Image (cartoon, rainbow, N blue to C red; front, side):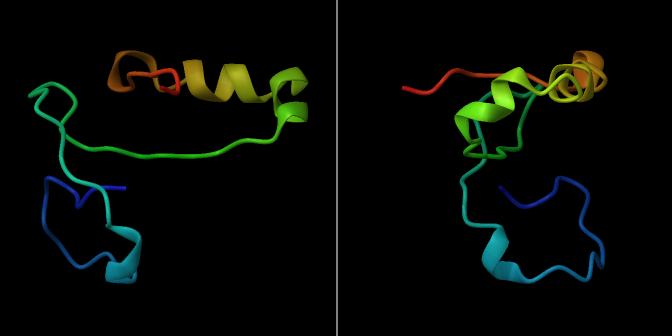
Length: 62
């Protein structure tokens, strides 16, 4: 993921912040996750993603 917009002591290792920021002002941070195929059938995954509402932009793999 990219570094948080709001700087503060997160207590997280710097090694997880390896992605660059986006050029989108509304969605400046990146978070990349690789999910197993079985997770597509997980009944809790989609509601969890949708639960972020307008604060999340899902982009398909290239």
